[in-house]
Length: 447
Image 1 (cartoon, rainbow, N blue to C red):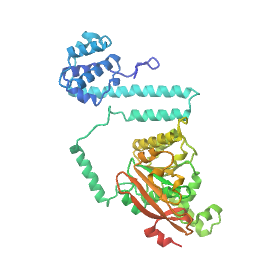
Image 2: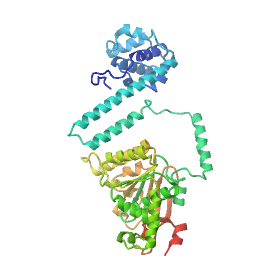
Image 3: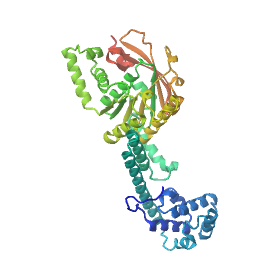
Image 4: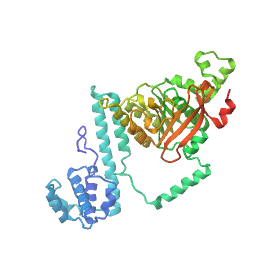
């Protein structure tokens, strides 16, 4: 990052600490390995120090058996014609005069890293301010870029993620195994469907990118909403729902009919008995106590999706997010073919699961060729990258011509990175627009 002054104020830096770090490396090359896990060349404020540190790293990588000292360092800089930029021979010689111990050098390295992050924060905020003043810039794109930059900056504690020895991880691993045993095998966010949870090894996991695919009118939204209601009312999870197709009030009407078990057509027409009204009020009271957050903007831009998801996580700490559906999300760049746009959207949502550390369940249509038959992974519409990116893919199919109150629906777990695949059946209760387990609810509620 280029150095600059902000409103005539010198950017945060500590030249003495930078010199001390460089001098410590010259005195003890072994410290460079540890320092390189903390500092990048751009973390130094002075350009000459950036060049010196980069040269030391390059030498170490290319000559692992040789030591870097004043003589070898001067030789390397001369070959690159950068000795003058770095202050010359006399300046290099002065670096070792007040070099700290290796332990103190690591403390200095963390100081330099924090100062570097402050400078980058100033750069990001200045850029955001300039873009905000520029009326030709799309404000949503500006906000999304700012959130991305800040999120990236917040995660940059080190140059790269640390690696671990198996020994250091064993305690955490066995603790997790014991916890699962104590909780009867539950290891994720339960869907409320026992058979589905078993195949998912306890439910959806943090950072799971889940696709639910089906043809129109099969009930993708109803399936997602049933899971959301189960999560809210049975386990009291904090649930976010981004609905690009249905108004929030319509979504809540479906939720209320599922909880109250009042015929959905009665709710839509208003032809309700006193008993049904009482059931709806009870359901409303139940749902009002839950942490359910809904955004219903149609045809949202991808950057708006990310912004809303981050806001829900930041302000309400949601534990799981549903998005209905991927085909309605507008990509930032509409100049590329639609399949490339969907590929970018899918990759971005996958990255969002890791950033927010929550499962994200995304609905998707499948191709027309699946009419009348159980879909396959390859039938997901518009982009093969959806299949590739997803950790879990669940496909739905049923015979809509079957005129019965509760329709058997095939649920295919077509992909599952960390569990079983296979098929199970659920019942779709048409009158209350809700999916139920056949083993229990189906028989008891069949009319």
